Length: 173
Image: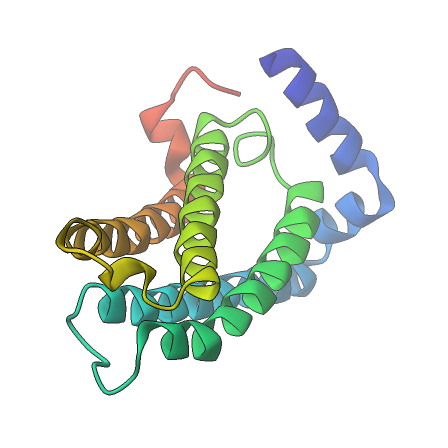
């Protein structure tokens, strides 16, 4: 599997976009900046919804109001994260690309984060009182909301650790 991923990474690197991203320093810096800013927006928006669901902030607004306010920002920012991430992947060193165990960890964390965020949003959109219907759901929301936020924080940390993954995985790529 690692060989296949390394082959894909080499093909990405050989593409015109890959050579541009790898060879034009300001383009890579610009893409990384947008990528990081978009992740910050996701983290902030998920944090606001999570704090409300956990009952720690925003009590003047209902959970569905918080979702309506912040969910569009989450999904728009994730589109930017996806596009910039794909472009960065095209010019990535194999140590930071597909074959990297740290990159793979980041993707697992990101997919888990997106899934949990979608569950929180969809349950509230289908039933505004879903997380407040009974004591069990209220207690569950106080666990799920911070877990979602923590997953996003771990995703961001894994992304940052891509540059240093060789320390944790010295034998990879």
